Image: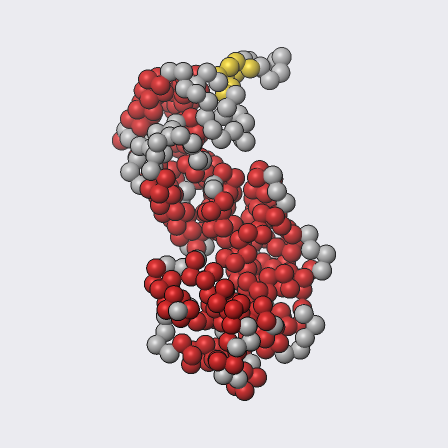
Length: 383
């Protein structure tokens, strides 16, 4: 079979699912063009929940045939056929509620989609990036084990993060596109990890890569019907440090976030906005230069001053006290003294007495976000 016939076959095969769901129609875009097949469901980017299937047997048969085709030894020989197959996979995945099909770990199409994200063929990478997000659409009443589905989806996101962290130039476009596609449909509980993936790209040394990430964040916000500021708001505890950690050596991340949030006060306003969430991690990671910038944004001169702010201090102490180290007191004070010699005049007990109730509340928050070991340490301390 010629490559052209292969592409036509894959396209028509994927349309069977559209027909089985009763959403396929013929459409003529302009009078001088021939009639074309169009799916009322696939053609709408905001469509999430598939329509009721009218012919499940036809849909399942189409999926079986598709899997058999992409498993053929000769399938990998033609670049264009693989791109068409990935577009077809997106359509099939969008219409299919099957756990066996929508599984990155056990299904062949899911594994193939992951593999294609790092393909040497740009068109295939981009198509895979667009398909990736379909696997994260929540399909209600599908009878699936939600905890199992969520674990597998998290594993897929970890794969995408590992791919992003490799910092391979030709993979950035597909990775950013995949993050953006997932961000449009994923549950709010897991959206923070997606935003973190995109924020990391905002500070990229290549301005084109940074612009791609900026655009995808806007697209995610628009699709979810919120402003960028509202999009980020619930996730600052896990995003704030990444936004400001390299402020001195790589200020473009903070600058881009400031632009996204449309903060009239610029980066200083951003630092004031994020100080409570960022300072605990900045102290833990010994980022004294960034803490100094926060002090200056607050109109202060010394790095210890923002740390002694009651709200900030409670957050800082909570995170430090939750660390798994032999001597938590010496550990905490050594980090604070690294930030400023001013803390050499204080003891941990004195700092805790500033507002013990607020520190306890922050400790419970840290425990809630941690693993069982961290929760056990916090329970012991608060007891």
